[in-house]
Image (cartoon, rainbow, N blue to C red; front, side):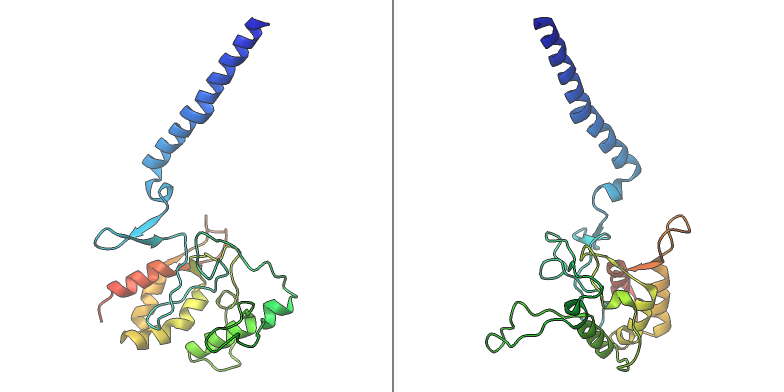
Length: 210
């Protein structure tokens, strides 16, 4: 009995050492050598070396001189500690038309208020100078499952070009060139759709000369 117990303890210790020690260290070492940028969060730094974001997480750009990400339901919006979507189905009236209640007091809207697709589409058309009947890309008016999708569709980016160009005093042609430079293709040539990383595009805009 004692012999069997000793054998069991030895096996447990060896497996603990391998699974909780050696294996994680090997994987960590390989990732640091072969995929250091990705393994450390795909962080983006400014010219001073300060971390200003990640390629993997959306940020809530709202100024007219920047490209805007898709809407977010993560916390109060773009909160990396509260990743999540709306969990509303495609036939939900709340998802389509939103919820709009009387303000609790001047300047204090009811926390139950919720902008639906119709509201988001109206705001998107207004900020980009589009006609009320203009069709807009679906990612411009829907929230992603995580609320932190860092990318938008090329169609979404192209619609925002005129606004950004006007705000920055740059030519639309120059901005379209930056979009092309920051557009990733399909994975392995067949998976997914082309996409534009909003943070990287906005940093390229800041670095562009008039």
